[in-house]
Length: 436
Image 1 (tube, rainbow, N blue to C red):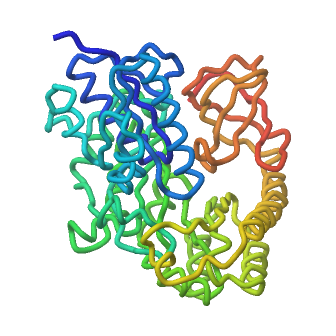
Image 2 (cartoon, one colour):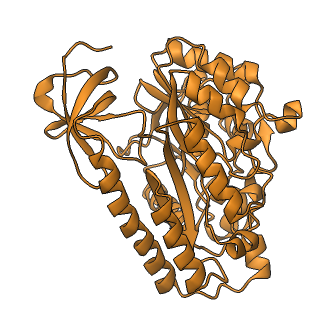
């Protein structure tokens, strides 16, 4: 049977991207021609993997669905299928409101999608993927779901409780990625801190990262989204002692005032947070910390916000993101609190924090001038080769811009002397041209 061409379009986070990559592989095994995020309109089947995290993401997902519905009406598509977080949350409503979509699926309905395309699901190749990132880096999703149930977050509703993958299966996948040329592995989960507790009865993050570090071809291992409450401190020793584990940690804090941490159901206090940050920096000297804060949560007063501003000035973070609160259906905050802060105030607070962070980042970047850092080259762009140090994650952090006359190879590491810096990016020149 002749197979069609499938374009999988992914919205949202890197965890969604991994899901798309697994589905791409299943379709490829079945003889479909597969593309990802293609801007061409030559695919007869589109599968849209949606995001439903906050209002802006939901709006983007709905608008993208409607754009493909328009293409479907014009006869450019034979099938339009929608999966992912938004689809999982609002499947019944979406089915009624946008009947032009052939079918809406949950977040993990891979087998049903494959069946509906008259194809075979290869269970033994569940975690095999068609890589959509550049060949030299890839994501490794070590668990699904979350047990934390923060007041503002709807994610547990459509991902379910935390479910770890076994260490053995993750090592097998990581080795396979390394054999295909992956040099940097980005370890992701909704909550890294909880990894292993559901499966082994205790946190196994440190053991997993230590074993991943034994894979010789993995030159960088990077950790994203560790929950601060009950943080597995033993992972810091691994980070400090294993050369290929980046001195980098993404640890979303969300707020710092005890009142707001309580209302957000974060299960940690201000003092505990400060002690944790101090301990991390003491155990891993020079570590780059990335965090995220949420402003405009119901009940956040000017005093709470000023306390947060003072905190990020006193304990500056290398990287920081800010979200304005979005009231999400059926969350604890939606049920228990009134969304009492005007959007204008939410946005103003987010802008204020990012203005402070811009100054902090500019100051921190200055310390790299004159130093030599290992840069992994991601791409050519304009007049530059664009790379990243161990302190920079793709998409979300700054980059190193190197004059294109250097004739570097994408996907290779080079020692780069930092010659300049702005608020978020570094500028440098190669010391010598042979890759390491």
